Amino acid sequence: MIRVRFAPSPTGGLHIGGVRTALYNYLFAKKHGGKFILRIEDTDQKRKVDGAEAYIMEALDWCGITPDESPSNGGAYGPYRQSERLHLYKQYAQQLLDADFAYYAFDTPEELETMRTKLQETKAANQQYSSINRMEMRNSLTLEKPEVESLLNSGTPYVIRIKLEGDKTVEVNDIIRGKVVVNTNTMDDKILMKSDGFPTYHLANIVDDHLMEITHVIRGEEWLPSAPLHVLLYQYLGWDAPTFAHLPLLLKPEGNGKLSKRDADKHGFPIFPLNYSDAKTGEVAEGFREKGYMPETMVNFLALLGWNPGTEQEIFSLHELAEAFELERISKAGAKFDIQKANWLNEHYLRATPKEILSGYIIKKANEEAISCSFAKAKAIVDLLIERSTFIQDLWNNGQYFFVSPTEYDAKTVKKKWKEETVQALKLFISKIKDLESPTPETFKEHFEKTVNELELGFGKVMPGLRLALTGQGGGPDLMGILAVLGVEESIKRIDTAIKTIKL
Ligand code: GLU
Image 1 (tube, rainbow, N blue to C red):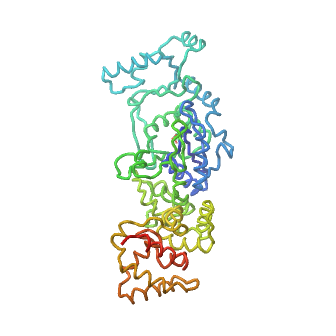
Image 2: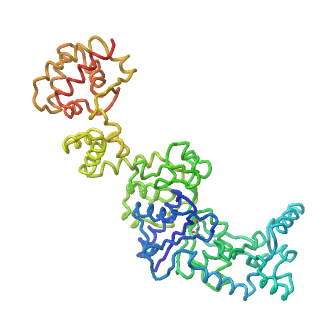
Image 3: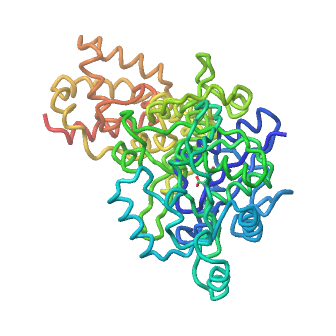
């Protein structure tokens, strides 16, 4: 049985790259009839942020990538929060100590600083606490046993470090990267247990992946450097390592370097799936959801950021993705965050949304402003605006003139298109439509054509003026449709007002 996990640390807003990692795990599990697990890695008590776990769950739910096992729905391998599994990490740290694969280290911050300065001065190839210099440090390998006992008993702060054998080759086999080979001389004796009694990420991660029977570790490329250490931890604990797949980075839209919140701000797109309010600064960052991206868009967009189906197909539902997904088709190269693609997909999914839902949205927005709006009117607005909308909000924001008469007129269009002949034509148009009863766009068109023909003016001379009068804008959807939504009375009122207001 395939078992994969998404293992975020609840240290803040879940970055969109994290959502992609979760999605790839989910897709892989579904493809193989396996399980997708959410594990909260909250061993770094200092960086833990209240509400972050709930945020992560809400974000996953919104995307429809709900875990089979998680802190909230439980499962047979729980608990799923690392802070509730401390006894397990202690047990395995002890196993490593007993087997001489780990040791206690009592070095004070000052001693560690001295070590660093010394290493820098000697320009040693390995600048860390490692097999090369550990015998010069204060740890259970260098101190006499009774002294170690007494330090432990007296409550002296200590950490437990892994004891790496020097000059050994470690191989990591990664589905995406292939074989990665590292020599242990370039690695350090990483801390496994911290002085606060909490494990570090490395120990907790390995213990949990083993106990939770994780078969594939699919995670961001930033964890690739840790993978050799993980492989050794599995060996030292006598366990089989899972299969690794390290996902390519998400790159800035320009393609040079890792995508950051700053890049997203610069380009005006979100970096978090949902609104995220920073407890420290009080700053609220707008999420993809609130901006108007649909979950279908997110899933489709993120899936294609680093993975491709090997065909020309670009539109995929979550279900279709799960069928097509293969780890082998994930690219090594970083994936450029092309927000235009996300917008294009959102337009696709917005257009595929039932008209009833979109009309209902307009009615709701209108009601919030104490404006009444019939279903027929809302539906007509949707029909007019849908082709030029990227987000559902555009249907409301770009259609304000359907509810409120313009008070300003686009200056550029006024200057270029509002002429004596425009006014003359609009007056003639009014006389032609004033007695019509519930005309359709076609009827309006007929009368408009008659107007311009009579005056031998051509559409281009009158259209912009009529649009200005009705909407205040220089561009927009089909004018005859707008006339039909506004109706004869309101349209004439607006044309009259424009004639009176706009200076020639
Ligand atoms: N807790 C790690 C993170 O926040 C998990 C890395 C992994 O998947 O091993 O990304």
